[in-house]
Image 1 (tube, helix red, strand yellow):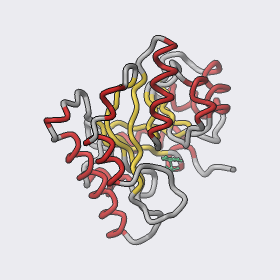
Image 2 (tube, protein in one colour):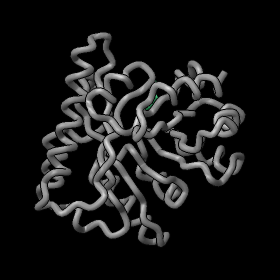
Image 3 (tube, protein in one colour):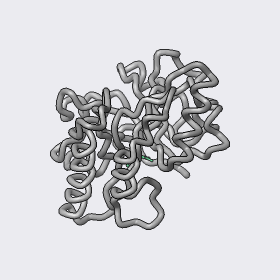
Length: 221
Ligand SMILES: *Cc1c(COP(=O)(O)O)cnc(C)c1O
């Protein structure tokens, strides 16, 4: 089932778009099944769950952290993930940098932007994100590479609203990335799209989709 879903997805997803298989709440055996079908990139949203899965699975997996990361848990995942997609505050970013520096590694991150209408979602507001870059605060980072941005659309059946949200995230990504005076290097990932809306996200420019339910089935929270 998992292998068949993955195969179907890879036929649908355009080349150049990275598929992150979101395995949160699913057991290591399910991840193993996807791994055996060739998948190497997985997304997890809870630190304890991620840390318990890592030793059970092959070491060539690229783990992406995609959930809200509490500052007191940063240290535990530094050096173990290939991308933290969900940097949602300056404080978190500064801490990632500090812990990466003391661990002697460089951590790759995406800045999470909040455009959806839900009150509860984490992330920088578009103005806050622009301020962060325009004030050149990123220049003080020593061991963190900001690779791009991640965002979610509103959780709604209104397809036009979803499309507008993705378009807003993409436009923000371009505004920052195309601002040559910032001198950003390797700012080239815009992660948007999940099981229910990834096609719209890709149409609006996404180059990284995070898909869970469609591959692994529904989650038991
Ligand atoms: C859970 C989650 C996903 C995957 O959602 P599905 O609808 O199961 O595909 C994608 N991105 C983030 C940030 C998530 O927390």
